[in-house]
Image (cartoon, rainbow, N blue to C red; front, top):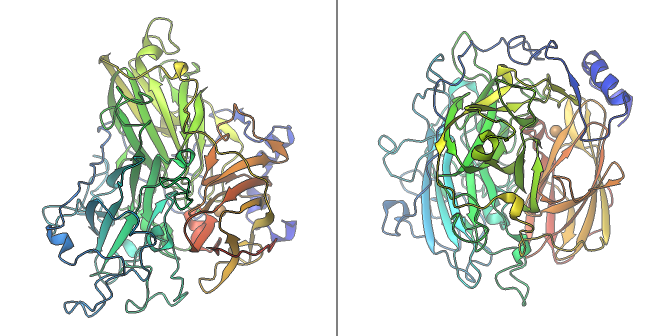
Length: 632
Ligand SMILES: [Cu+2]
């Protein structure tokens, strides 16, 4: 990017960061500055002038564990309209619009007809406490467990956890029917759009079930429920079909797909074009977890990772700002650089505690946005200088080649890290946190503006930076294995890197207040390039000074092969397949990927959801004939 494109506000904020970078640190390294520097909570170095949230006492309430969605028989009232391959576009006499929002038939559904059926109804969340010191929140949206009566089966946020399973040689396909029962009229709190599209992030979905932001035929004609085929409107449902086959299932030799394409920790969230940030901030996000023949969810079988759900804990965190005058979560519609909150909300509670036993836990960490980047550490609040190791076993939806011991993980928006923490070994005599009866999950990455983080850390042990506190109880039985003894997650491993036949460059920049890719903002009416099915491409991501972007493409995963000219070493957390790439300030990242199986239109975009809405995104297609456009 050129200096004349720089947001003038940038020049006020950059000296500290420049100084750090000029010290010669490589990407991924950080400088530590003292906690005497402004803490983000309290003094609130926040761009838009929004006042600070009311104070809250940390660790008063337990971490909520989001319930799992249960399957329902086809005799359930949710399926009064029978599920069908073709969308149900018949007019519902009760609403005057089609029963179903979907516009496309489910691809390849007859190969693996759905075996399990789930339902959920999106609606307003009844007034809910996120902290005893704050007023009940009335502006949230969520989904219930599928019951027809939202008064008894109430919408919740985070959204219910969906669990599904790969099983080679067996059809385990599922169908999730999502009803839109969101309020009509103006959204509460002045933000949110009740025309929704549910994206299952990182799943190998056909466009019909991808939950993309744009209708492939209607383009920007988004508001008409009789023609729009991607959003579902109040009064409509949408059937999402997940075939539970790994990528490559259309290849004759691998009818179950390629085991190396196995996915694990996914999430689902709203993706309505132009309003994703508002809707996710309102609560439309939850986990979709996939198990398989090796990562079984049972610590006595397969890789013997801690059992779900007792010791395998999905944790979604976001940062909110509570307007002190209204007491409600506030969303600044006019802030396009990104939105920072000053309250960490973890599984729906501000700074909760979590009671753990002395044994191993698998924690699935997900940065739910909207704009904050994290570097997470375990901190012993009584001895903050201790370096406390844990194991990272997965990055985004993918197991690493083998467990990687580390003392921190970095997450940009939408990235996931599965970690294993051994609370027994850490606190036992000789352990890194010997004798500790509590530990913090602490974000030490400095970020004072929505555009992106600094390249430096707060010192350890600042309670304002803590997401949650673990209260460590008694020793408990543990049948999971020590990650140190796992030398490989084979056969779930990295597919070989194939030589790219097409190279494309994507320059992520800002101009005239709009976030752009290769000079242009999103148009839902334009497909910018076409990938050829089963053909390998190299994408080069570039960014400028002053901002960072989490870059996400739908449908296709890839491998980062170079960051700023350097290869990714096997000891890196990035030696993995990825669906989100942390593109830091003034960085260049080379990414290799290949599309398979499905045809159709997908987006790639920045996952700072505020950037995404304003409108750092483009559409691409996957077809049997591609193009070679180097700068789409
Ligand atoms: Cu961005």
